Amino acid sequence: MKTLIIIPTYNEYDNLRPLLDAIYSYVPQTHILVVDDNSPDGTGQLADQISAEDPRLHVLHRAGKLGLGTAYIAGFKYAIEHEYDAAFEMDADFSHDPKYLPNFLKEIEDADLVIGSRYIPGGSTPNWSLSRRLISGCGNVFARFMLGIPVQDCTAGYRCYRRRVLETINLDTIESQGYAFQVELAYRVMKHGFKIVETPITFMDRRVGQSKMSKKIVFEAFSFVTRTRFGKQQHTPVVQQAIQESQSKDEPSPITQK
Image 1 (cartoon, rainbow, N blue to C red):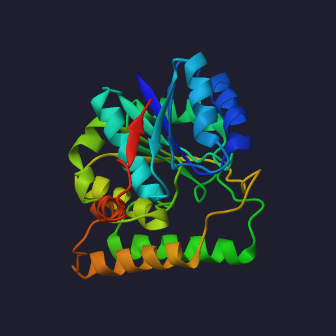
Image 2: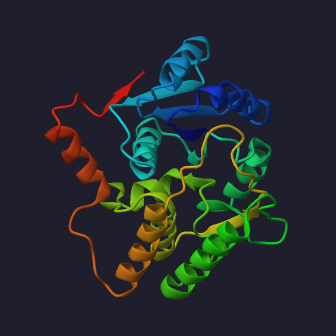
């Protein structure tokens, strides 16, 4: 199976090379796409250097911070264009342990979406605070109850999609970022009748740098779930909004490929 691991980055210089080495130690044949949002710390330049030495690594450069959701959408489109059989979402901060990648590859052979789950037997969040456990746990219960998503961890960001899923769910109309992005994609996959399975993971807080969690991300997820449940749609998808903002600032093209 031809696979692509999509890793959005912003100021992940210290994590990037160790993460790539760890990934290749478990799945040496996979390709990796770094989607860098013009990191001030030089993450994008480091990715270019590594890519020049290793043809398995590809890099997309974007003009600035356009959001996690749009980074993954850019990666998904890259996966479709280059005919990868499956595409992963993966964080750059080691919270998504590469040791689980072989489990994902085994499960995706008979599934359309595999989610690395913290909330099924064998999954855990050992170093989370009580408040973070409550926010995440209650958010998942709320999304499952309101939208009928048949998974225990619908906000998880460690995932693997079959290309046919990405070709079907209309990436250009995705509205959300952060937790809401993961809920929205899980909901769309479910609505199209694709098979979703969960595989247990232990989720650890990031090793280096600061968490990108915010109240805005949590509120967006709550807002998406309630709007979707009661049939109210946003007028401007996040993808189009990011493009419009980039153009209004007379910035260069938001994505360049290496």
